[in-house]
Image 1 (cartoon, rainbow, N blue to C red):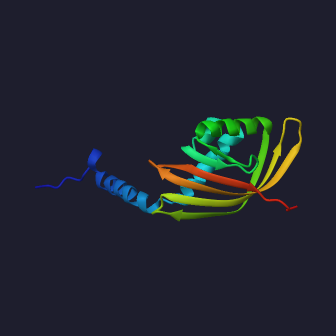
Image 2: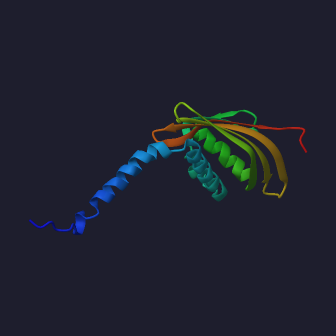
Image 3: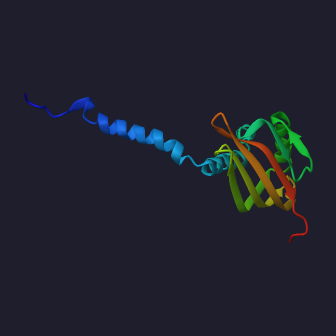
Length: 162
């Protein structure tokens, strides 16, 4: 009996199967909550730069709470967040921020990420008036149904800094 060499569709099947098994097994091992949250932040900032309020808010849970440094009190829920950020973006059509000393901590088996950051913000209103501020902020990100969402955000203005 002659043994024929494998060819055609099934010749590379064992290699493909091994590759799929590796990817499936390694995905959970290689998943990095901090990298995933950073990617969400990148997308959120990109949406903000474009003025895409819905894209920006897609990174917040429906019942998220934001305590805003410029407003001074908390805003609860996506509808109120939309009104808050829409008004802020209208008032300050040009906005910029530079994060400093960012820190991330992971809890609950990689399901919760806390982010702390300082931010130098420069906002310019429609009349060209600059409004710089130094802000300290914290965000609580929770993985809900496979998506990283902000459930709580707090920002406060740091006074007395030149």
